[in-house]
Amino acid sequence: MKYRQNGALAVKALLLKDQEKTAKVCLFGRNAETPYSKGETVKITAVYPKKYMDTLQLTTSPASTCEVIKKI
Image (cartoon, rainbow, N blue to C red; front, side, top):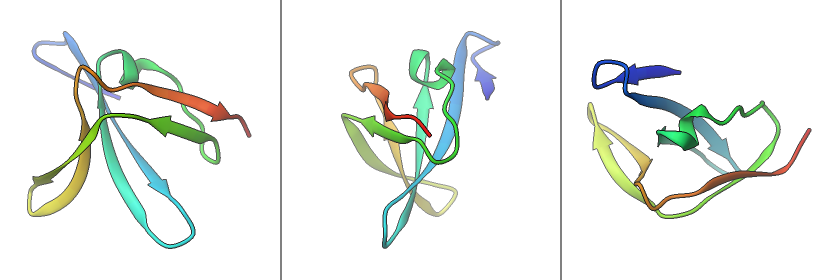
């Protein structure tokens, strides 16, 4: 986890994958502070596509929620 805005905003990136593809999802604030483990099933709402350093990724907004729905 990293912090931006002089340490006020937590930022974390997750790699989510299904049977076919992998997507990088950027989380902010409380969603970034939640601990996640490799292999867990995570439900993330209200994501949108964004290009960062010529790479397409998904990012969250203040309206997004992120929860672990199946622990490993």
